[in-house]
Length: 107
Image (cartoon, rainbow, N blue to C red):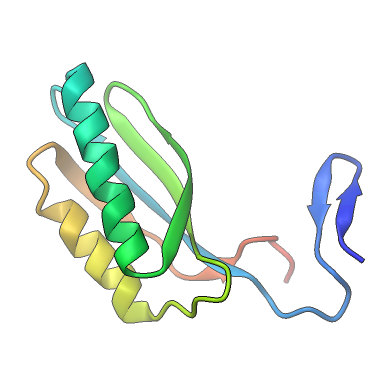
């Protein structure tokens, strides 16, 4: 059974890894309206690839962790397409996309 132990999420014993990847970039001159539009467009891109994100955006940086949506099987091509899309956004510089890793950090 999964639940909380010592403040952390616990994966059910014997379950497969939950894979995700880090995604970040620097942001240039983000105004309030720009930030809302950018996040909306990013969420639409994620949804189109069966992905969801957690993390945040501040005045000069986006740092998120991306996971496949429940019952979706994201592929490496989805990860690379998202990184390419982000790289093409006028607000973004220094785009970095991590490799797939176990979201629970269990080796």
